[in-house]
Amino acid sequence: MYEKTYPSKRFKHTLEFLQKHVNTKESILDLGVKNPLSKIMTEQGYKVTNTRGEDLDIDFSSVTATQTDVVTAFEIFEHLLAPLNVLKEIKSDKLVTSIPLNLWFAPAYRSKTDKWDRHYHEFEDWQFDWLLEKAGWEIKDTAKWTNPIKKIGLRPILRSFTPRYYIVYAERKK
Image (cartoon, rainbow, N blue to C red; front, side, top):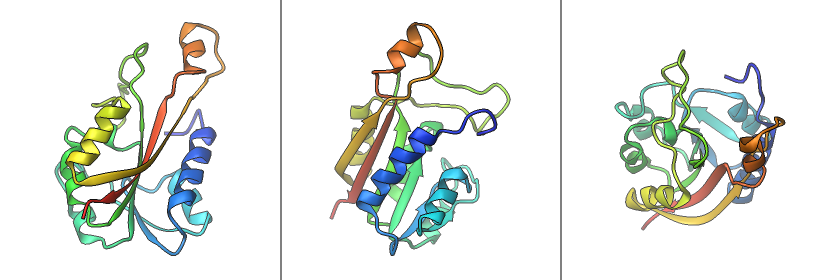
């Protein structure tokens, strides 16, 4: 997935946000298979367990069977048909999650070669907030950032000031 590009800006912002809300003594279940970001989290002292690559629209077993302090889900929920279901199944009291935001000037992403590398949802921030609230989460903090690219054209100009990523820290409603 990262053969041609490495999202260092996204990883930097994500790690800073995680460090703001989660200490390294807290255990983490990271939704999704092991990846460069979960490796960085481990290198920073976090105890991270990843899911096995199961279809989280259908199979919640990793989520329900793992007891951790925090669940992280970075760039996961846009791939699911029904993210509400897995969000409701999370047993942890803390959630740190990020999504790519819907860009009005670009179509939803779809890989033609990898069925897992497709975005079913491209959320606006308020839609993602509503999803989390409906699933029983109370949003405590959020952040956004842009993702400029080194190309010439209207879309690259728009990407330089239009937020592309949205990250949320939420706690389970009591």
